[in-house]
Amino acid sequence: MRQLRPSTIREILKVTAQPEIISFAGGLPAPELFPVEAIRAAADEVLAHSGREALQYGPSEGFPALREWIAEEMKRRGMRVSAAEVLVTNGSQQVLDLAAKLFLNPGDVVLMENPTYLAAIQAFQTFEARFVPVPTDGLGLIPEALPELIRRHRPKFLYTIPNFQNPTGVTLAAERRPILARIAAEHALTVVEDDPYGKLRYRGADIPPVKHWDEDGRVIYASTFSKTIAPGLRLGWLAAPAESFSRLLILKQASDLHTSNFDQRVAHAYLTQNDQPSHLERIRRAYGERFAVMDEALRAEMPAGYEWTHPDGGMFLWVTGPAGLDALTLLEQAIKRQVAFVPGRDFFPAEGGSNYLRLNFSNSTPEQIREGVRRLATLCRDWR
Ligand SMILES: Cc1ncc(COP(=O)(O)O)c(C=O)c1O
Image (cartoon, rainbow, N blue to C red):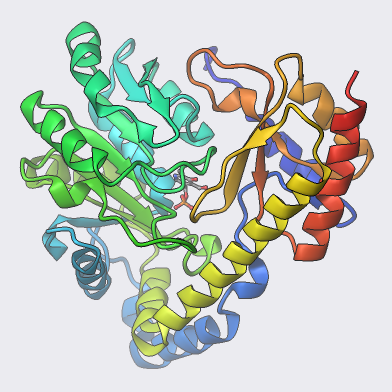
């Protein structure tokens, strides 16, 4: 516990929940796009037709029909997987916790992008992991750097977010994915591929996940319904080769017996009785528009010395400020002006500067984005 830091983001989120604040902090999907009515109808149907089963305990692996649906969906995205390899979890966050429990003893090394997802750092820190950053550039992690890191550090696994990474929005280039899979096979490296945003692409063509090239059973793939239906359902999943699957299943049982049977059945009814592709298209279009509005506002308003990423999907972009910028102090000033963001420092498991900002564009309207960027840019212009 002594090594754990409280999350700045969760603290900030308490402040930014106030309605008068324009928040680019947090990572919330757009609530106006939640399919509330369709979920209500699905819940009604589940209760009307299988109420007793839905309210009973269920299998730890998950509701069988939902596991089938997930496996089919993964096949459509180019992954060879069967329903038997799918474990339904409480969000994909639980996958990170279970992977940490399975693989990590105190002092064990995890290879990670630097920066990376804050709550993954927390999940692995709970098991006293040591973090070793993998070199990255604008095309994601550099797989050729892995063999030397593996030799030197004997990592328990590599944690990576290949699509529209949190926090940077960067996507691992298509040509690097088979190389990563090959290196993992050659060096017996477990890869935890975290893919919550893969279906939120608003520009360019889809790229198959690393799991697509995983012929050797090295990749544990994680995803979620949090960004495609709603995060309040807390429904995610992992797909893992048989040996890790059976161990992860035991850990899942020890942790919570199973994910809400009722919620899984509601999600399954929703997914099979609605036009999910059209719903996704609405989300993608909205996020693409919001990214474009934020990018345009940043270009119009930000002073020289600031750069930001141009993600093709997902919910975040990553701003690099001038070397002297202290994003935490900037945030204190920003909150007084009623705009919020997340300072980048907490996303670095290893070394990293204080001159970074993560901006979320999925949870604000275009008008809020324009006004919020205007307020933020004024502060950046006045900095020191
Ligand atoms: C990279 C990444 N992984 C996992 C999660 C956890 O999502 P959930 O537990 O809602 O599936 C998030 C949420 O923001 C995320 O950004």
